[in-house]
Image (cartoon, rainbow, N blue to C red; front, side, top):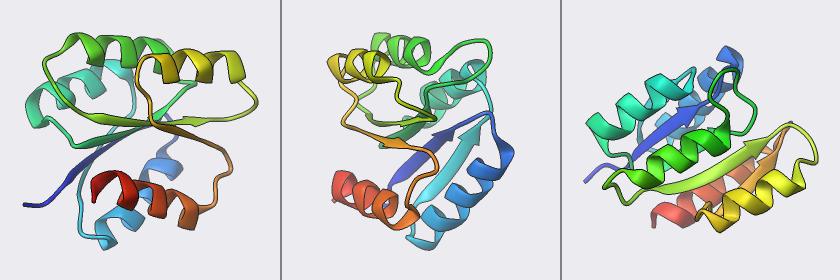
Length: 119
């Protein structure tokens, strides 16, 4: 059974990079540029793992995470942040985010973290 990963980031370049890397790992990858699209995809696809950017215009990462947690989905979440947003990370962890990466992230580290969560 192929694992499904959803990438939520408003930066096109990052979505493309992560899509490429994670597709090579054999995951089915979908992507969303904003919270609304992310929530639609979570509802429709029930991804196994979500890579969720903290800073997204409109609905931010925490709000997206809060909304995901209200749904009946058992999905793992890894946060991505731009800079030391430690208070936000703390809050995300309290809502069950498993890990976080600071951009620019090491793509190998990220790949390993995803692999570890989806084993």
